[in-house]
Image 1 (spheres, one colour):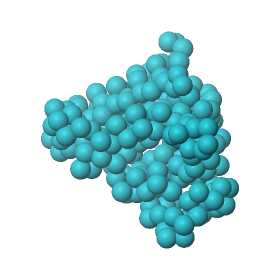
Image 2 (cartoon, rainbow, N blue to C red):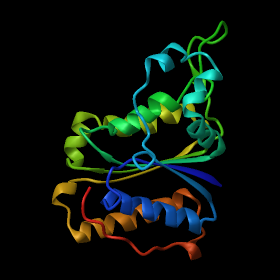
Image 3 (cartoon, helix red, strand yellow):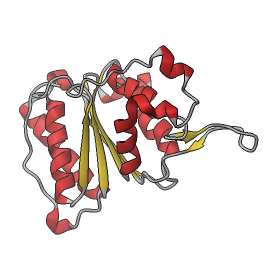
Amino acid sequence: MRALVVFCHPDPESFTAGVLAVVRERLAAAGAEVRVSDLYAEGFDPALSRAELAGYLDSPANEAPVAAEVENLRWCDTLIFVYPTWWYGLPAVLKGWLDRVMLPDVAFLMPDQHNATIRPGLAHVTRLGVFTTCGASWGLTRFVGAPGRRTLLRGLRLLCARRCRTAFAAHYLMDSSSAESRRRHLARVARRLDKFLDMPRERRGMSPVAHCNQ
């Protein structure tokens, strides 16, 4: 198993960083090879430049500005996102990662004379996980439409293997969370991951880390 974890949070002491720690722990327990793209720590520029837009369809030259991220994406068979939900959606840096890295002939194939619409380019990705936090409640997030979750688990999922497995966990109402609610959520993340990764029952379990802010 080769897992790419895309982590997006500006504070390395955040609760979201605690979720990342659990994700890495369970991947290690499953024997996975792991790469982490820590977008803030790496100073990833989310802005699609004018030059990149002009060369967007020029494959493979379009890969050059984000070559390392593209290589990671092609390397993995398991893709996991860990991030806070802001304004019901993806943080700008993570949305920019999708804009710049999910390129034609990388994430999808463009329409041609035989195909009227785009086709999947990530058929090697057989697992897609999303682990997030939300300031809003579950009900309000669903009322708005949960655009961040839909972007990844519907839009991106369509570009992956046909039977790509998915996993999702969110801690809602983060601003009124407690140490106990955060502990329970980290345990829930671990359980979801163990099932997602087909972890043998005797190897399941973890020691939650209780970071306090989103």
